[in-house]
Image (cartoon, rainbow, N blue to C red):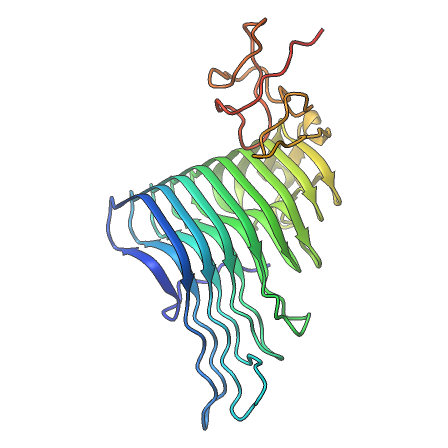
Length: 343
């Protein structure tokens, strides 16, 4: 799955910030945005590809702050139609769709990001549907906290199965990147992935991948790209996946990726591939999610984290003065569940 395409001039963003160091986007909602379709065929030229769509684009803006931003219902343009065809079929390539892109912006700070219902443009009989990415971030020393990406899907008008669009929840590349409290859920398509990482000295903690359904070569929770180094993942929860939980690219060494204090539930593939794992991270726990995807107090994922880490923000049982971190995206927050003291 290759989703590392650069910014394309034909892509159109609803909100754009380019070349503004220290820019601030705060308390913003972007909804109901659809990019133009590709041009129909004319003499000497075939049907054009659909325009890409991006809800929010922040580019070449080091130190930018993106806080409390919601992106919903983004639709890329469909491919153009063939000349003289009376049918209502698209023949050009479908456009890509992004919820948010923060690219070329080192030391950026992202928090409170919510992306949902992002759809690519449908392609034609012998062309491709566009890909979908919820959140793309590139830059060194970037901080990402409190992200939800949900309900992504590829085009339903796909005709040729060899050319499906891909779905990726969060795509991050850079050095010294810190990522916390990320929840990706409810993706359906032929090729599906939760979070993809590239770079060095990356910390991913308090992460949940839930209900990722891929029909062909997908449905994994976390993929680490080639040449990555010193990637540490802890307090993650991988639940209801149609593929592996964590995949470290075969070109990397197992020591390049460490998975610690994490759990799986209903994962069709392997817990990990080509990664270093502590013993606890191969264990299974049932999240017993409630209506807002928090852990039920009776869940075995509660208090399944590292007992040596501080957890002042998590609630503790009233009869004990000691708390233990949960696993998953609410780990270490005041929304985590307090478990009853064990006998």
